[in-house]
Amino acid sequence: MSAPSQGQLVDFGEAPLLALRNIRKTFGSTTALAGLDIAVKPGELVTVVGPSGCGKSTLFNIVAGLEEPDAGGVIRYRDRSCHAAELLGQVSFMPQRDLLLPWRTVVDNAILAIEVEGVPRKEARARALAMLPEFGLAGFENQYPQQLSGGMRQRVALMRTFLFKRDLMLLDEPFGALDALTRTMMQRWLLDVWHKHRRTVLFITHDIDEAIFLGDRVVAMTARPGAVKLELEVKLPRPRRADLVTDPEFIRLKRLLLDAIEEESIKSFNLSRPAGA
Ligand code: ADP
Image 1 (spheres, rainbow, N blue to C red):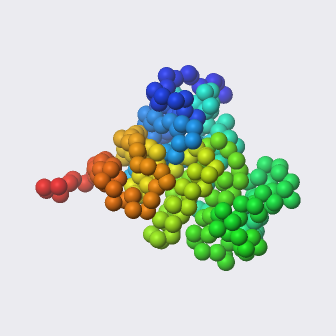
Image 2 (cartoon, rainbow, N blue to C red; image 1 turned 135 degrees about the vertical axis):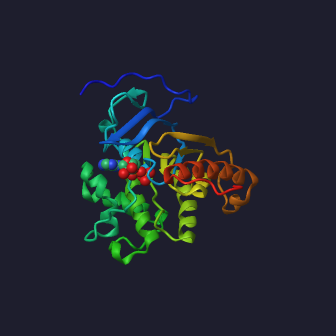
Image 3 (cartoon, rainbow, N blue to C red; image 1 turned 90 degrees about the horizontal axis):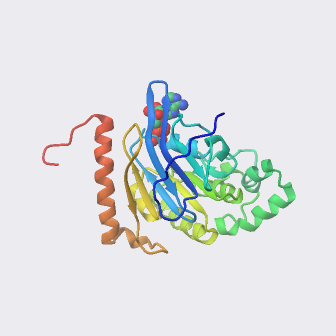
């Protein structure tokens, strides 16, 4: 493999932990991403929203090191240009489906990634057991995934991601399949855990409220081919309270994002706006 070219970074002030510049990804005749620029600073929680099919999963796969972008783009991780493949193992990630193994207990599912990494089983289990209360799973260590609620399963999967300690955590719609109430509880809980562990997070979602509620910055993507349509800083105070969704600043950001996403969704469905809208 030839070394990726050195690119000029977008000026994000503080040096980003991860920066993607001019990322393009084609699958045959389909261009999934074109000219995508995203950066995540250390300790930041950046959320990415976009219409369906805009390339969010493709972005996820590139940052997880599972997919290589086309030539010409630049990936920088910790001040160094690299190929996507080099991110594999550097980034902890949680895909949409929780991928819990039905024959493993809660604790054995949670330790899967660090066990594969070589942490002795006894030590891995001790680390997981210590984390159970924080993840609302105390007393459930010997249960199997099929005995758990949807929210609990997601917490086991998140615990696996947290245990696999990496500078960057990548979460792809972790709460997408949960009912609205559980989802809200999980968002607040995630912010508590994030605050305590001070991780850098890239969080992919199609839910605008979730993106604003969680994020330090929200990146809205264009319709396919995906690029950045709009980037907004969320200056709402932390810890974020549940009633934040009624704050005028929250509503202002939501309106901007809704407009941006609607414009892009219309493009991707080839629709036109209703008269007067
Ligand atoms: P999103 O996650 O935002 O819904 P995806 O990243 O899954 O979007 O897909 C973006 C586009 O790329 C879609 O048109 C999809 O069909 C296409 N695509 C994604 N992965 C592949 C693949 N492995 N082969 C062919 N096309 C793909």
